[in-house]
Image (cartoon, rainbow, N blue to C red; front, side, top):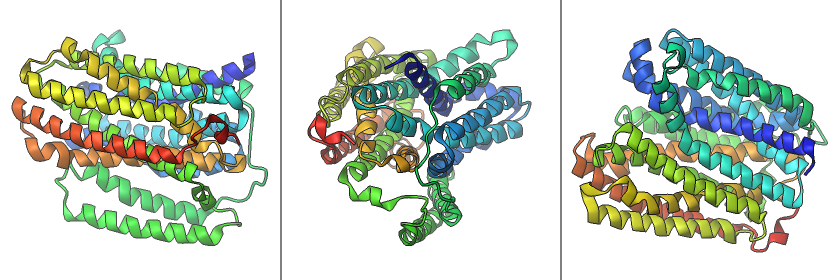
Length: 466
């Protein structure tokens, strides 16, 4: 890989890092934001929903726009929007402006993120491509865990008396670097046949995703009123209308190329990515509550637990990157089995030690959980997109990322059934420990399902060539 290609890869991974960090960096800063802006509990919820909803809505459309009008162009446009919105977040004096700026961040991400996997897919080949996807997985894994840690540290440091604001302002120099270096080093790529955007498909897909993601994100906050289920059912109907409309558009510039799903490699890999998001949404939220309520840890101690997980993820992702696709589906399946075993060991440890479990005592299973998960993300993305035609790379990338976001939304919603049904919101330590043990059974079952779906991926490394 030459110098220019290395810089381009660094820029793409930096863009991915900004997105994933901003999904979670706000979580540990919420108390400080509430104190300085006077935001209420419902408003705080929208600091996360206001970001994630535009992302989920716009990923498929953003990916297709990259196919039609240039993937580098859309990535740079998204980076400009995201960087500007981050500056507005850091300068916001009240909760209304902050929520609006967070939504603008989400729009920028929806334009920017699909271009990352698509650009890796169309510009790299062979071992360089697999190594790049391995590094992508490493960034994804580490950023997911380090977001809350970085948010807590930056807020606690209170640089220049800015309290929580640096968690957003740090994106400004990073975003400018992506814009300037991306324009210079990332090669432009488009579909060979650039047709007009399918506006009807855009409208139907946006409506369907709003009707599905919004109630999943808000339902547990409002104790699942009837309107949540009505919206979900309506979203399913609109989704069916979207699929029928796309079937009629095939061969006439559809938003979503449905022939992608004829190959088990793409359909199975995307389904595995959805399950991956599902188990992450369920595990990470409840794990935080278990550490602090079930074991009485401070936020700093809980952050250290996340660091232990990230160390394991870094090691697993490094192995995935160095293997460069040589083991095909065996690599992510092995990582999944390691995670299942570690989850089982962690559950037994929780049952045996109860309230006396310490950070040092849980270090081994936590690091192993991270190690196994770190072996999944990069190879899964690599093999899922391997046979996608270059002209559909953006649309496929957008759909793959949407599967993760929908999975996280549904996983978060499942906490009401898997965790809060036992605790009923109580801070009682014993109840929270019992509830988390139940969650581990759910997560283990989802890991087994993800492992089974990976049989749709190539068995031999040579099978994944374009």
